[in-house]
Length: 278
Image 1 (cartoon, rainbow, N blue to C red):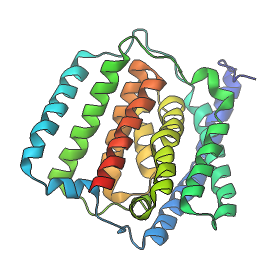
Image 2 (image 1 turned 90 degrees about the horizontal axis):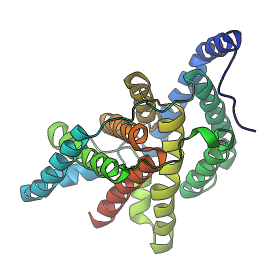
Image 3 (image 1 turned 90 degrees about the vertical axis):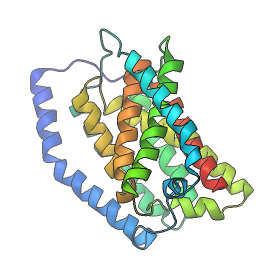
Image 4 (image 1 turned 180 degrees about the vertical axis):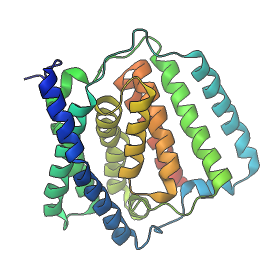
């Protein structure tokens, strides 16, 4: 049964008040996630961040990266969101759904603390994907005619922004515990990590953060990007994650959810390949 698109004013007001009253619960969950990440990593210092390694390589490598970034900026300046803009799921409805599903995932995954980290990630991804079923007709699974330009521009903006952040800020090591696990993994396990990082993660995150929680307006776009960044509980990469969230949302509302998933996949694949090569 699909989610209805219209609501009575009283119902809308009730859901907004309910969402506001549940905000402290979300903050508690977010705090618990950050505390758990600190325990996992021993203080957010598991390994060198890949951007830090890149920043200390031969400066000649910055020439092709700079070219790709400038090309992305050029294409981005020529692209515009569709007119009229596509409709978005009301924020009160999508935020309530996300909070409920995230709380369920947090409680459900607590039963799997003994499972390997990769298994936990895959279980979490499938949990989040299953609960997208009621929203399947509102996710925006259509490519625009110009989707290759949007994907190319989005990927270039991701690359340029990430490299610029690494060069200008010199962030401390990343706190993502998946990095050292991936580097120590065998061939078969790396294949499963590739499936998780480059397929399941983009599907989950783009569907929730860029299609349900975001919208074709800069207010909701920035809200979803900041939420996306804080959920990762990685202070070293927080500005970069927010930037990625903005770019992915820009691609989603310009060219559809599949284009955003593809952009996210290409970016994660770039990070995956670089980590193994570095």
